[in-house]
Image (cartoon, rainbow, N blue to C red; front, side, top):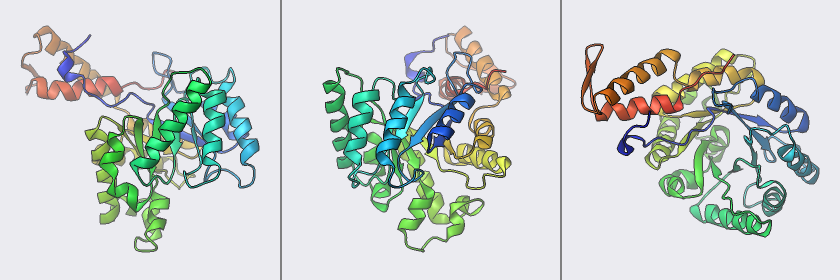
Length: 316
């Protein structure tokens, strides 16, 4: 079914879980896991981000860049759902990362994540470098940018960053963000329950989500550091989605992936109800209807179409 154009405004349909891998072993394991969590259309509910920055060993930048380029171009990347977190723009590795990734793997690279962003100027600069190397390699494809929001400057410029046409997601880096405030926010804010209670963190999370959604982008929630407790990852994902408007979340351990997908995606009952309401609306030529004793019209159809667009549990 195709609803009227004025009710199809929904954020990009990205995987609800973004799994971080910092070496070849973890990347190959992640690719196998990616294939276990599929939508009916064959796309995965898990994106993989190969980490050249904080999660990677120092001093091995060139070799790791080479390894990741090979993985992106390998047949195992059949779903083309691999991105890379590069170095910050202040690093001497920043442009080297972009040159190799775009020139040698740009056709298969799903996105590029830029950490420690501070301004739209950096985003425009990165987008220009990507465009240059893409054209030099014979590609006109524009690779989406994911921005890690972890500096006070980024928080101040959050709406301008979200509005940039090259940006697809705003990712909250809670640990670096807290570190930037020099002890003003306690380290307990890096984990639950304090990360959802501290007034400053709640304000920051809310502003990131509002900016992303206002510009039809995705807000991506920070990691759950308690890797031995997958239930905590579910609770964090559920709370981030239902109370703060985040539609995607990072995973740092394979055991967290099913929990994050469950917390970030609509339930089977939600999707079923949405389909019933949209089907009834279509039959009524998109006029008002009643469903289970409640009135619905175009205002609520927008919501339920969003649920259908985002719905989809892993196939078994």
